Structure formats: structure tokens, C-alpha cells
Image 1 (cartoon, helix red, strand yellow):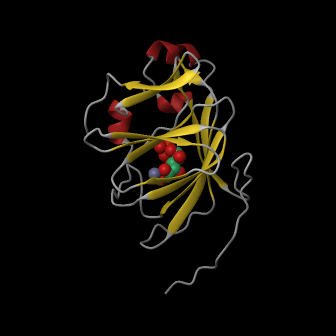
Image 2: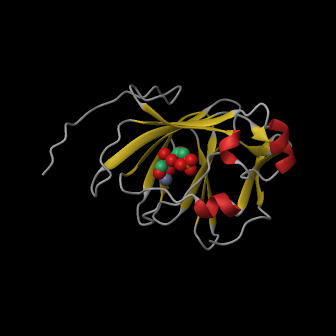
Length: 192
Ligand code: S6P
Ligand code: ZN
């Protein structure tokens, strides 16, 4: 048995930043080529290349069975055309691994999808504990005017499968229309 030392880290609830964290992902628009529906709007923003989101991980716990990892994600406010800034989205490489999200700051949406294209949309505000069941792909979206931050806890062995979502996205696009969030069908979507 490996008795690794227990630990506690503070999370700034206003900013989502984890104390002494490793900044594991920093994704700019150029890291998400082709993922937004409006390619003309994406091209118009290419030179500015805005920061879309950052992911902070508490520690890299070993990715062995039984271990957990936790992280926070901070998505900037903004849109590409009508479509709000969002994460890439992924399935877990080990699809049977579930995950728990907890809203810290700002206002967001968690969109989930089965490989067959069934979609679920969950609103995330501070205090919202949203469950990502096994086998559901998931993406988060900032629908507010300030950074949207949330905490995630997941089996260390879950891994990432970005392929299907990078190719055809989610069945719904989350856009702003007349100043409000709206989910509309994604014409580019095909089943996994
Ligand atoms: C990991 C968990 C999150 C995301 C993060 C960024 O299972 O769901 O930590 O990795 O929100 O999203 P993405 O889709 O770029 O990995
Ligand atoms: Zn995940």
C-alpha cells in the first residue's frame, strides 16, 4: 500500500485559482481552431487571439485506480460571433469514469452529450454541484459577463478523448440571442 501524504489546498472562491497550483492548460482561440460555428467571426478574432480559458490542477496525483484528481477551470467572458467562449469538451478515455463539477464564480452552462447525440444542459452558478455521469461527453460555457470558474473532481485514471467533439462538436450550440442564452441545433453535428 502506498500511503501518500494527505493535503489541503485553498481555492480562491472569487477567482477559482488554487493555491500553489500547476497551470496545466491555457487555451487561446488559436488552440481551438474550427471549434466555433461562425468561421468568419473566428477569423476576425484570429489576430487578437484572445485567451479563452485556464485550468489549474492541485497536484498530479498518480493516475492509478482509486486515486482522484481535482482542478479548477476559469473561462473568460466573450463570444465568437454569437457563440459564448467555451472549453474544448471531451469524453473520458475511460468512459466509465464519472466526474463532479462545482460552480465557484460567474455564470455558466454545462452541456453534456451521449455518443448517440442526447443532450443535457445544466445551468451552473456559484454553489451548483453538477454530476457528469459515466459515458457523457462534457463542455462548459461562460454565459456571463465576468469569468466563470468551477471546481472539478474526477478519477485520476479518467483521461481525455477530444477526438469526436473536436470533429463535430455538440448537438447544440450555446449562443446569445437578444441578450439571453439560447441553445440551437448545431448543423455540423454528427454522431460519434
Ligand atoms: C477533466 C475536467 C476538466 C476539464 C477542463 C477543461 O476531466 O472535465 O478539468 O479538463 O474544464 O476542459 P477541456 O475539455 O479542454 O479538457
Ligand atoms: Zn472531464
